[in-house]
Length: 130
Image (cartoon, rainbow, N blue to C red; front, side, top):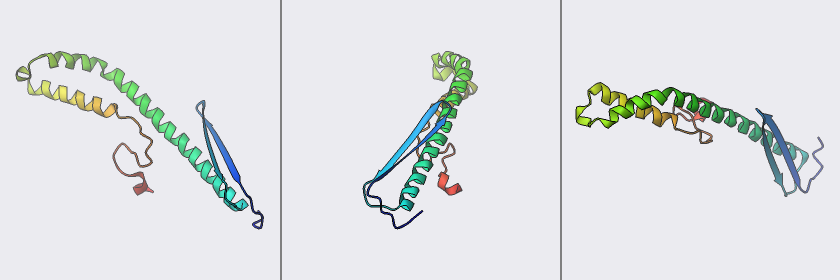
């Protein structure tokens, strides 16, 4: 590209499609810029669109996992519901553990993907791995 060209305003649009969903990122600048700077803007938009697709994949997998686990826990929840009707003083340690285990599992599966850049299930920062 020629570097002696000055562009007064520029906008770039990048679109991605995945799984019947469309992701679009549009960036612009109104300051004088060069073709190389416009190209860098385009690359930034492309990276953001790619990131949106990857986050969508993670969020979709998270919701699918939630649905599968909810179905699996349905019957256990009914059994635990019966245990919870008992006075706490009459429950065996095994029954108490069963109630606690179900509550812990329900808490974990209710977590939603929150689209933070550093979000990971194990709590580690993703930038640490890069």
